[in-house]
Length: 343
Image (cartoon, rainbow, N blue to C red; front, side, top):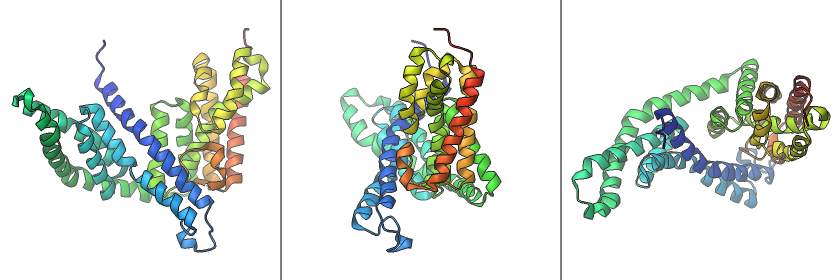
């Protein structure tokens, strides 16, 4: 088996953390968004989301799930690095990052630190006989690992990373309209350019970080950017039938649902078969949609759900216009660029 490079190993560890974290982000985030949908704003605007008992229940559960986002990220990065023994060091390191304001970046570092501390301890404690393996796993790794990770997070990682997070949040908050449009263009284009790959995941995680910091506009641009690729391909197969094979036209129908559901991966097979024409088209269309969403001041408290969370999106009409605009740009560009299909 070919040995992985350091970059591949880091990416694999990171994706393990993200994949275990996403159910907490999506489930918790959607429950929080539904709390606003079912609440009565007029009762107490300052307490919107928790005014009615049902809304308060949804928000409490959603907040709790969303609150485990960073510890789960760090915990399962550490598990990927060091095995099950890394869970406690990564998880607590992620919790410390969350409580200190070090946020996503702090939790990410906590995961790797927690994992490699356990790897180091396993080497140092190699002299202990195998008959005492249970002692190492149940006592020494958690005790020594938590102490070392806790000290590193408290005094080395959290202070500078929390300061950096604060600066980023302040910059996003103070952005003018033109800067926000550019940000929307970039994150939405990243959602389309590799469809579920590193850039897509980076853009989505940036939006999650912004949402956690109270900036929901980036999430709206990210969601609409991720909806455009599959939907625009579906529309292109409908409008420009001669540019696609019968099999592609059939698959295109499924992409209407995938696109509206914010599942970018539905476009992968089309991009793989004709990357020079499909990728520029969907990337430009997504960028247009993200820029328009920012220009229309759209915001999404829900981190997933596509068109189905439209009721909880601020300025839903603007969001729909941005979505349709991006889809049309991508579909028309695809139709113009692609050559007639050879059946």
